[in-house]
Each structure stands twice: as structure tokens, then as C-alpha cells.
Image 1 (cartoon, rainbow over the protein chains, first blue to last red):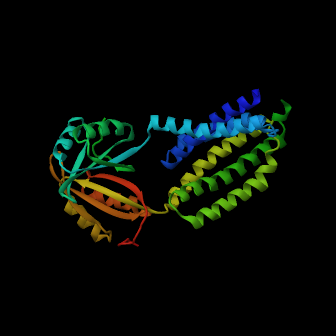
Image 2 (cartoon, one colour):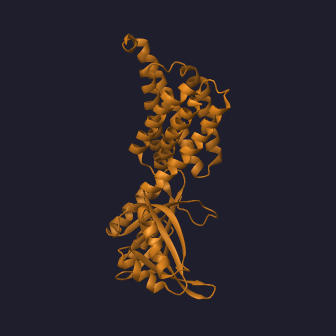
Image 3 (cartoon, helix red, strand yellow):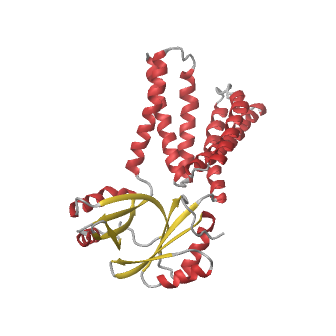
Length: 166
Length: 175
């Protein structure tokens, strides 16, 4: 019973670190990847392996699997809080494009307007690049200005800086 | 404590480190290749990674009570990740789409890039201070630095972003 709990907690810890490692890896952040991988591997060899012997006990099996799965979730949750990187929002607004642009610019976001055409006539297509951390704030502003706006987010890498909201 | 000083203890730790570096390098490359949907390469990398793991690491890993071995294991694991990332950047497999926003020199940038053989789509757009040009340009990842340099020669203040794309239907890609 006690060992099942240890196994659960240790697995949460190492899978959290491994999940964060993957997220840093995908974004090309080498130093953070190294640190997360080192921590995760150390916890794995020191902790998990010691408890991993004798898996005949079904409680330990459940602890292992539940810890593994929970660690992935915890890692994702943390990663969303840190929100490394940049996103581009693409916003399509049928009627309230001008208002949208104005309120986004007022809040310090850089917006590029492109005119497009939808089923029922001319629409405004907006492109807005921002740090991932500000995504929710931008989304709030957009939905306040036009509750019917269509928003997609896409991850991207800045090559040369233009204007980023601080 | 005397185990820490013996040559063979250091040797074992070194072997663990080296093996872990090798298999994690392959594993990291595999993950990055999978993200770009390259099935063939992913299979080959996965095969050799698993092979190294089963044959080599499994046998060495039995003796992990020695702190030196644990250190070698963790450091090798972490270092393999970084080496995999470095190799992947050098290989630069795949395609990216560059978006270039230039307030004044859009046409000049497009002309310069086209002269070098890149395919550019110009879109007129509006920024805070009036009209801007939005250039969309899909290139091989290998060529990103070169395009960046060319754009910079024409307009130092252009805003450039890149995103990974997969070609669905090939239009014009500069060879």
C-alpha cells in the first residue's frame, strides 16, 4: 500500500519533468530540455526503479499507471502556465472588424488587417502575433468586441522582431 | 566509498553515459521527425534506438546502485536530447512558411526574393500607420537563414515569423 503510493508520487514527478522536456524540445530550447531530462532521468533511476521491483502487486501496478498518466497532465498544466513561445491569432470578423482592430491596438497588440470575402460579403481578416502568455487576454478583448469572431491560433517562431506587446 | 575511486567504476559510468547519449540522440531525432510526419525515417530511428536500448542499456542498467552510474545515466539522457536537437537543426528537414510584414519596402523585398528564385505571394494589408505589405513565402527549412538575410538587406525593420507547414500540394518550391 505504502509502496504503491510512493510509486504513484514518484511517477508523477518524473513524468511531469519528461513532459516538460518534450515541450521545450519541440520549441528548440536546449538548456531547459537538458535540465528537465536530467531531473526526470535522475528521479526515474533513483526513485521509480527502486520501487519497480515486484510488480505482482496490483496496487503498485495501478499506482504506476495512474502516476504516469497524472504526470503527463501535471506537465501539460504547468506548461500552459509558463506558456513558452509565440502564437499567431488569425481572426475573421464579418461585421465588427474595425472595432476589433481598434480595441486590440488600444491594448498594445500589433494587428495587420487584410480584407477578405466570406459567404455574405466582405469580411475582415486580422493577423496578430503575440507571446503565448497573452493569448487569453487577447481572446477576451476580441470576444468583447465581436462575440461572433472566428479565431484560430497557430504556433510560430519569430525570426526577426517587429512589434510585440509587452 | 572506495568504489568511487576505482577505474572500473568510472569506466562503467562512462559506458552508461555514452550509450544513453547515443540512444537518446536517436530518440530525440525520432520525436522531431514524427512531428513532421516523416514515417520512413521515424521507423529507422525508432528501430535503432530500441535496439541500442535493449542490447546495451538493459544489461548495463542492472548495476545502478553506484551513484556514479546514476549520474552517468541522467547526464547521458539529458545530453542525448540536446545533441539530437542540434543534429535536427543541422538536417533542417521539412518546410516552413515565412510571413514578412514590411510597411514601406514590400515590393522591393518581393522583387529581391523572386530574383533569387523564391516564390512569393504579396497581400496588401493595413497596419497601425497605414498600408503595409504582407508577404507569404513557403521555403525549405534549410533556406530560412538565407531568406532572412535577403529580406534584411532590403528592409532591416521587416517583421518576420515562421511556422512549420506540410506541403499538401506542391506549388513552386525553390530547389
